[in-house]
Length: 250
Length: 261
Image (cartoon, rainbow over all chains, first blue to last red; front, side, top):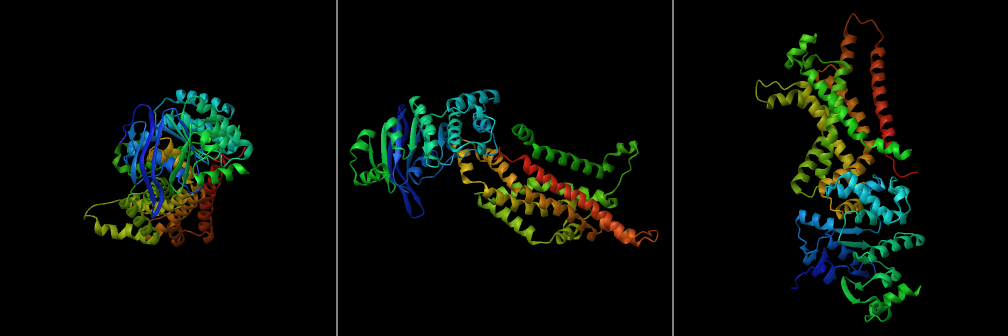
């Protein structure tokens, strides 16, 4: 088994997952280097969301080993909470807390998990809200913001925990077309800052622009893994070709 | 402006709860005044709980049951949705048993049956026993209301909290319960109103709540008044308090609304 070095952010080794009799993930092996940006795509039900949700233990896996930031994921709750606080995640439906203001959304975890004083957490939150270009909305509630703004808040909320790895689970697929760009711009800026990112997305322009590697999944398996240039220009796998022609064809 | 109003409105649950808690303990202290002999120096006479009567009794039982049934109900709801089989089983059994038994039966258990099981000579205050029974009764209903509200909070909320590294209790306390309690305000307040009115059932086990007193007054030869006057007055007082509770719940819902400009 490969030893995880300082340069490795995530190492997945022989990951298998079943939902009852349904084999959701089959023998996934993936190593993500620190600072690497990976885009995962594939048809719905191919296991791409399940895979990244296994990385921060939102889904439990039955076989294989996941090492995040040098820590092997176990079923121990403390261990899981620690890994989750190091790994940021953005969801398709944002999952902001509707009963808290934007600022409170961003400061909640730093205050309760990191035990940072409120004033300091507020300052950090405002810093990241400025970064995602919505500091003026800090005292509003999520329900008062547009979808694109909410997703940017969700990104800022994750960043407030100073994560070393960011996971994106189809962050733009619940958004109106004109809002997709503002979220992607935020993600591009994040990538340029050197964040380790795994993005499940069908935004091929984004993939070409920032990804170091593109992964195609089908039926719970990684069927193709390549640089974006080769991946888009000259896919090897028939299934990838078909998928890309459909997604890029319209 | 609205945002400011809301930030002030947030600790309302806690504030109301603290007031209720203090007043309830206050009442319980007054009730056990014989143990505080020094208070007699201020002209207060010891009063046994058997001598409690009228609206004092209704308020004592009502306020205690309302105050203690909410936290107990939350605990039972969390227990019933827990992953731990023992906790889930115990909570479910308790809730189903209490909900399957009429309040009157519980009150009779409190007044008669409990004496048989308690060691001889032990004097467990009757009002205390009634308060405990009414609290248990109300908490079972509140648990089910909150359980419904817990499942109405989208699973994404727990996932969002989990992805930030919050543990189970932090997630429940900071994310899930505030939203679930907000959803369940109408149901909880309905239960509170019902419990407050149900306190009149204690007249059946011989405590002199307003209705028990009304019977005594009617039987008194010195009473020459009109019969409906007594009941009318009791009804009026009950209506005022129940209507106030329902208005309060509507005000609370407006205060906690966060989805409009």
